[in-house]
Length: 255
Image 1 (cartoon, helix red, strand yellow):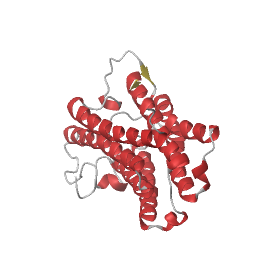
Image 2: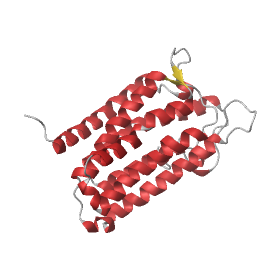
Image 3: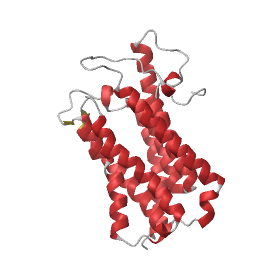
Image 4: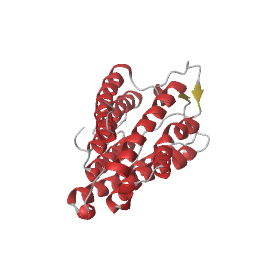
């Protein structure tokens, strides 16, 4: 018997949780295949701005395509509109703005870009299809403490992420090479302030949506970003003798 789409979206969300845990284990075992950690012997590599734009674009294009191609009944309600807008706004910034601000950046292996592209297509479908067609919220959901807290976390997380990326882009002056210790913002407290911002953002989205789909994306984000943050933290400690020992890995005052 054919699986009804709401049940399919739930199943895909649980699968996303399982994939997140699997990726967490793989990243702990083999490390991150991008940036300074990527193999420079890969035959197929893309410039960093191109890779970022291509791999993130499905998370923007898929929701827009789905909403334009089919009647989006649930988007007549403000909670659904706002939640989907939260998702889309992030990926407007991530796929259309962030890549063009990158200064230099190491080439990205093609396989890494393809994996990210597939995930963004997958997750873009799950989040947008659920919110546009099946998510049921009362009109007063936008005043519920869970929504208000989640929206505030999402907004704060996005601002932290953007500000932290700005700090990283401006570590080197024109003509300078090599790596430097990030200073300012939440980098004074954690080694991966940009990742912390993104984690807060999607945890806020998950709370505001109060759904399996939103929660699965938040869990997946945590599973991917924590081992990357740990790898960054260890690299900084090994690279710089004067690296601040009090800095945590990902979450201020915790780890």
